[in-house]
Image (cartoon, rainbow, N blue to C red):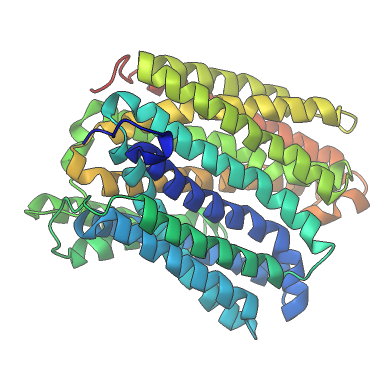
Length: 477
């Protein structure tokens, strides 16, 4: 379907950018906002910080378990309808969060919001890619990444400022209003034709097995119950995840209309891009987890200025997204992905050497460069992944792409936290990270663990460079 000749706002592809970009900016804004609000929520409901962490944990579990079936749902029922429904549920969940009379009610509200978030993630990338011609796929994914970067940059900065003026509930009310506008934009700007590309038959066995595998593995890696990574419970969860994965593959191979056609893994571009995505996000999430601790506790700067430094990464992502998309459309995925991953490895090595007197301005500049590097590999790699399957599978493949990111983030965060904790325990300094600045010797020990964590992250990036060398130089397999 070709776009009509006329102003950009009448063209199908840019109308899709408005609808999907607005939705992604709102949902990512909320994700980054939640981390800033956790201490206030814990104080309001008189719960511990560990308990309040379930505000974030429940979202990760719901989203990761529902992405694949909701991607299939979007392919079968229409991407516009699925996106509108997802954003509407997201709005309701955030409104209920702000009105929550108790902590249990709040967790239920976050679950509703997470279902809506999962649906938007499952359909958004597919709806956007489908609106662009194949030779502009990088431009489409770049536009999506720019919207994500905008939400990621504005979330911690604006929320940190708002907390000094209003209560923690108000940001959720604002997000509910913005999500309502995003639902209207999706209905108005996305084509209604569309997009019904798959059978409407439900695959309950595939849903159950995929959700079991993803949830079991996520809980085993992240250890939200603090049972210990090597405990019988964690080992049992890993066994469940492996058995469920094997069962899922066998089940889907026997289905005439599978939820996820596992034969896609025979496509070199598909399995290579998926592996790169997991490895690279495992490395990049190290700075997401540890940099706030370094800035707030080790360096003692204000939350507002810490938010500004952290936001430079998202600004870099927005810049790099435009560059990465255009380079992919011209040269394919291999060259920009390897360049971005190589730059990420170098920057991680630099970050490993931070001390107690490193320049905050220089750190901000390095994080800006890190954001550019991340988009330089992410946009081409994701574009190649989305371009490898047949069009009727775009929704479920878009969902699979987001699962790769989630798994990478969980692995990276768990690995970085385990390394830092192991070093602190080695030095008999098993103290909460918030108390690092009050316990003698804790900061040097933390920085030692920091160096090891960033060294491992750099090594993961190097491995990702090697894997990325198998990506195509041009579009396709």
